[in-house]
Amino acid sequence: MNRLVILGTGTAGTMIANKLRHRLEQDEWSITVVDRDDEHHYQPGYLFVPFGGYTHEQVVRSRRAFLADGVDFVVGSVERVEPDEDVVLLESGQMLPYDQLVIATGTTPRPDQTPGMLGPEWRRSIFDFYTLEGAEALAEALSRFESGRLVVHITEMPIKCPVAPLEFTFLAEAWLRERGIRDRVEVVYVTPLDGAFTQPVASAHLGGMLEERKVHVETDFMVERIDTEQRMLVSYDEREIPFDLLVTVPLNMGADFLAASGLGDELNYVRVDKHTQLSRQFDNIFAIGDASDIPASKAGSVAHFSVDIFVGNFLEHIAGLPMTGAFDGHANCFVESGHDKALLIDFNYDTEPLPGKYPFPVVGPMDLLKETRTNHLGKLAFRWIYWNVLLPGRPVPLPALMSMAGKHIPTSEHETKEA
Ligand SMILES: Cc1cc2nc3c(=O)[nH]c(=O)nc-3n(C[C@H](O)[C@H](O)[C@H](O)COP(=O)(O)OP(=O)(O)OC[C@H]3O[C@@H](n4cnc5c(N)ncnc54)[C@H](O)[C@@H]3O)c2cc1C
Image 1 (tube, rainbow, N blue to C red):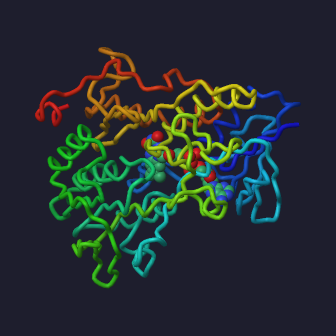
Image 2: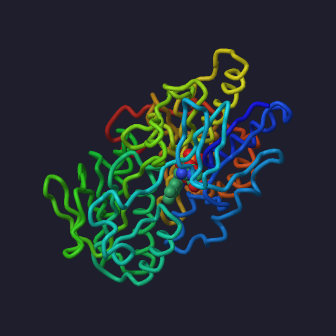
Image 3: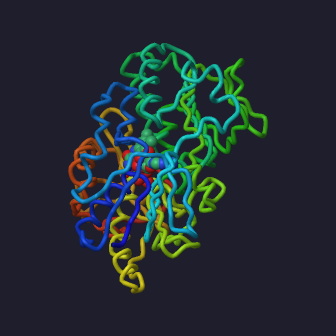
């Protein structure tokens, strides 16, 4: 019997287990998945929790309930992988030997890594929405917030869902307006990037949207510490940004056990080939989803598209054949912009988000880099698709690799902003 062990039963781990269970003979391959608990969170739903959009029950389900028959689920925390021995050690002392290992342990917000963040103001005037508890605590704080400086802050890149802090800012701005207190609140967006987003066309477009909403943007801000007495973000170049309510995205890091196992880079991301996601050190270890160091967005959509490519490659790999699939870094993200509208961006390693139509040229029905109600409905529908189609490993009728069909390259600065 061959043993496939998958670490992490989040978006990528669940899809992989379910898809491979249908492709690998039960009497030839066992599949074991490991996670700390039995709570699967729909993380994109966290964005709406601070505004009363989703309840706890709408974003949390049992992990086990989503796993196909014939997949073994082990509840436990991974302590270490011993890649030379082909064995995983859990904190409980349990050992899981493997023939093939998939690391899908994602990335986690680490407020402990910034001095002052976890100090006395944590969950008093400093909040995050990258955890469910954080988003729920922020909902409470926002309901009491009447006036002052609301600062939305990214500690460092990469973070999962890099558009989520922008979405939060757009939603907060719209929400303040709807409550009739927008003129009493100064909204500031603080980023370590040199613009609103990572890529020129999208950055200019999203930056223009912040400008329209009178959100001040502080760029190139590398936070050194948070002064909790003065309630200020302080950067390495000694800029100070005071806040009354700080909504921060803490440093994101891969799991600590990856450093302990000699498999991680300086942020604990697994070094892999960016097309096959096979470890650059070990021929029987893959890393899929946010856990890897591929230069793509850390996003559920990337996990989904890369799993589609990975499954074919994995079957070839275990048959001793060369892997013929090459993942292109395809990401596809809705960007909520407030007032029941959203944008959609679609890009990959080589092509930045461009305007146009998706998935079909001319007819869409989605518009790229443009605020529409259809995109917003797409974002809301995604929760149903996630639970009912993606996680069970059912096919989604979207190509895994990015297509240029329907996209066009803006030719002027004006067109870029108007895209
Ligand atoms: C606020 C927010 C909004 C988002 N919005 C979007 C969006 O609109 N679109 C989009 O595509 N993506 C979005 N994402 C990102 C998306 O949720 C992640 O990119 C996706 O879940 C990554 O899947 P993964 O399987 O790599 O990691 P995860 O789904 O995070 O799973 C990792 C799993 O590993 C487990 N694990 C970690 N360490 C250990 C250990 N030591 N032992 C045992 N188990 C361990 C964890 O418990 C977890 O279950 C959003 C994320 C957030 C936080």
